[in-house]
Amino acid sequence: MSKIFLANFKMNFNLDDIENYFENFLRNINIKNNQVGFFVPYTFLMQTKELLKDTKLLIGAQNVHFKESGAFTGEISATMIKNCNADMVLIGHSERRKFFKETDEEINKKIKKLMKHNLRAVLCIGEKKEERESGLTDVVIYNQLKATLAGLYENEFENLIIAYEPVWAIGTGEVASNKIIEDAVTLIRKIIKDLYNSELAESTKIIYGGSISSKNCKTLSKIKNINGFLIGGASLNYNEFSEIINS
Image: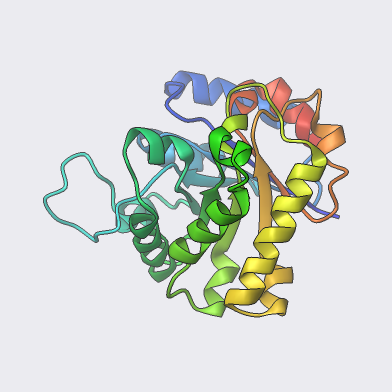
């Protein structure tokens, strides 16, 4: 069964680094029927798309503003991202929520804007460590999904991927157990069923992110109700990312 593998480069690499990365990555990878994509810095969207023009690899931006244009210095619109021939956009990452104070309501507006421009949205949700320890995981995930998906039409879910990324597992080396991930994915599907219907709950693509590496990916691949992975730090090494996909 095919899987989704998405790499988040975050604020790393210059153009020479990216060119070297893909020169080596393309030698090592066996994509098969999997979907493989990369969230690169805005400044390298067009160059990366050109580098990968003869491949099936997807390219995405790491954020977007919910307005079409205007006096928003330093921001990037969906139209601009579309003009760079990007395929997708990462939305609601915990680092955006933490450092830039993004709210679920803002994230919802961003998703709607991406849907208007036929760009795939990869929506990140997940609980903090103190929320899990307080038994609030279910409430946090429910509230995040209800707010970020508000007003979306059923057909728009074709352009949506939900990434379960528990905040306590991102960049910490602490990986969620298979049971924790399975329970979270089951919960997400139940919430979508309650908000929409069972067919949509089953068809929605859900992936996991949080300290994934070549050492634990085989164990994580045994999770049956998940569609793939969102990989941060490990994706910065082309050998490591290749090994994760190939294994």
